[in-house]
Image (cartoon, rainbow, N blue to C red; front, side, top):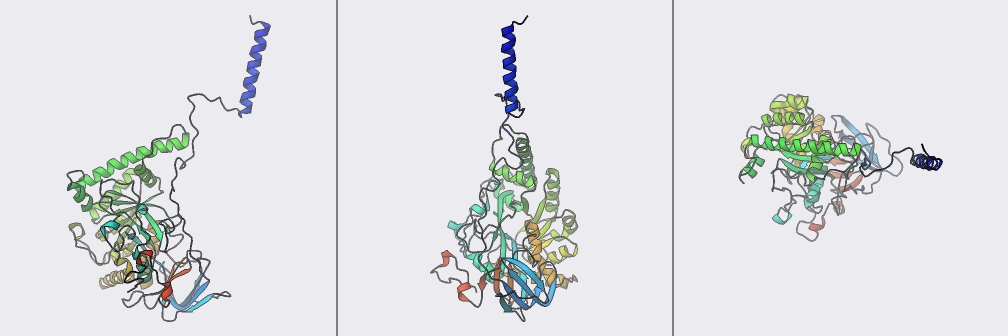
Length: 475
């Protein structure tokens, strides 16, 4: 039997407990074994610790009239006009009204195109001048260096950026780590503007890329050190083992971000691979041979990721149907092949054949000089295709320099064509841009005039060049 006093004490304790639960919103009491709350998906750690600080240079409303326009998506307007203001394309057509106060340029006899996008560059990581002290593009110390980020090597004062702008009309480029490793690290996409810091060039909101490589480079570099991989089968073995670790890492972090508890140990390399498996980071895969590209696409299916683009894909023409079926792009050279065994079977009709098959294809440079002449590289590929009976109109071929690389970089909704609302990345050429005699006359980035052949004050000069012989030289 409970005594009266005991009953009173028990009722008092029960009442206090009820009040306590009510005060906590009916949450159960915390115990030593309670989990830490879940941070939410994608919030377990910062995915953007080095954010873009890019701000467009100031521009003025501008109309360019009387020009032949290639819009970058295959469209052409003869004797047309383009208007841009506040950093965006406003209107493109046969006739465009100029708002009050706009700069009006008579472009009779000239061409206007979107700025060229180079999906494969090492500017800043391998600057020009190319000396050992500035060589920061290949972390060739392990076949798996997914922990390195190309942006941490980018030297904004590389004179190559200005040359690419003034001579090549390049307004956006992807800078990748080198290809010694199977997992070379993260790439970064930048706007081609003068800046004091890498982050001030960084394309706002552009997805990161993961540079991967297959073939001769990884097996030569590490086989020569008597370590795996020393063969192509070793390449895939290391790839698969690494992706298996990444899948397990992703599972642990996904569970923590959903359910809470103790966070898993951070692994900077596996952060990047987790980003790929989540679709946040795009795979940019150096690969020459058709058979290897086919294996890589199956490996991607095995682990649940997607290859955005193969680079240096000299044998892409052999598997154009597979590339199209897998929605994977191919970045190629016009006629640069045969310099090593895996590049032996290239053909100059590669780009035209890919286009005819309906695959996403583009030109790329991988070179500080080639980036200044990508328009001429497309002209060569176009001529080779036509010689083989593949008739591609000039304006359609411009997709290989504009919307297709934008698509492979995940930025086609913001640049890569002259569509209203997109970034005003625009080039005025002094003639047909597929002629070897033609040069950029004016280049705008986000509507800001950053190069003008007629104005010596608007020729890009990096800090490194100041006072040096050839300062601002655009020959």
